[in-house]
Image (cartoon, rainbow, N blue to C red):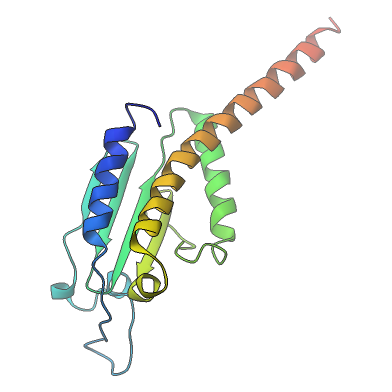
Amino acid sequence: MSTTLKPYLTAVRNTLTAAMCLENFSSQVVERHNKPEVEVKTSKELLLTPVVVSRNEKERVLIEGSVNSLRISISIKQADDLEKILCHKFTNFMTQRAEHFTIMRRKPIAGYDISFLITNFHMEQMYKHKLVDFIINFMEEIDKEISDLKLSVNTRARICAAEFLQRF
């Protein structure tokens, strides 16, 4: 992990750890229903204040909590058009396979690239520190993956251009 990324990820880790105090809470509107309150937003008193942890304007994490669920939305760094295209393709690839990632949402929140939804049932089945580690590791790896994809595309473009220009 780079030294510039460490304080940002530490702040995200600490905020996630504090926000993951979830408990089973039935709906106040419909009997025998237990929906994630952060998604349905039926009662304002059950929602926590959303927290944005930002490294810069383009790289930020939105953490929205409620009594029984937590939604984490991540905006990935996109410096140029190539990174925007790669990020869009990569996140589409991931969200199409959201059923393999138990906590991933199929559709991200507007203005963010990818979202996770953790409910009290996930907290009963999984370890809290492992969930936090997964999200932090995901944030580290997606930056590395997009950088590697960008280098690969640039290398292939350079080889194609050299091959094309050899004929002249």
